[in-house]
Length: 118
Length: 107
Image (cartoon, rainbow over all chains, first blue to last red; front, side):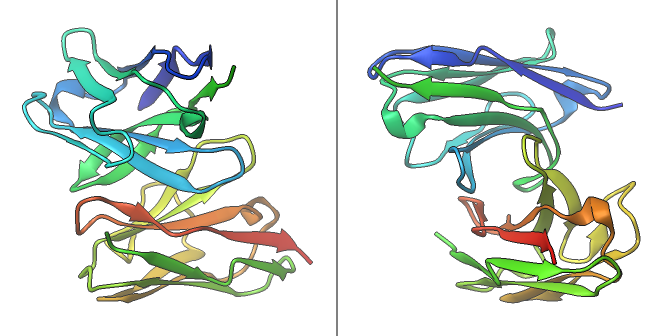
């Protein structure tokens, strides 16, 4: 079955960096576009980044553009999110999600919590 | 960005009730709307995509309708496991955007 497992979350100080990973299994990872979506505590969902199957096409939400970098390694069946210049408002659970069509995600990981605080 | 507005923000219902949640887009999005269910401490789960297509494995008591700007999620007979928060999402236009959520609580 489709399985997405995020890791790398934790507590980081404002201005710091963190790299999230998402390990995929149960489907041909290299054939699918992927997304990162986040959810601040007690809040709604926010799409933040999207990468094509080959990695050649990437889009970001304005809120993270210039600070976050999405990437993938199809040989390792893994998706990444490099986060720099972190702010308190980046505190959230970060989900990786498989893209079925356009920007619609049919399967989501369980999420990893990132807390930005001094 | 396309703004997605859900109503109501919350509702109380009993097991067996028919429940309807509405999602309105600030501009036309054709049929490109999805519905997700999220329980506390869990990841969102896809229910419906393309406004009315049921995701594999989702019970048939869930249905979706609409096109353009107005969409509806209906639960025909509410079950105990359906108490959760529901989100709509448009994926017609970049950036994809979500509604604010509708919390379905036990009456």
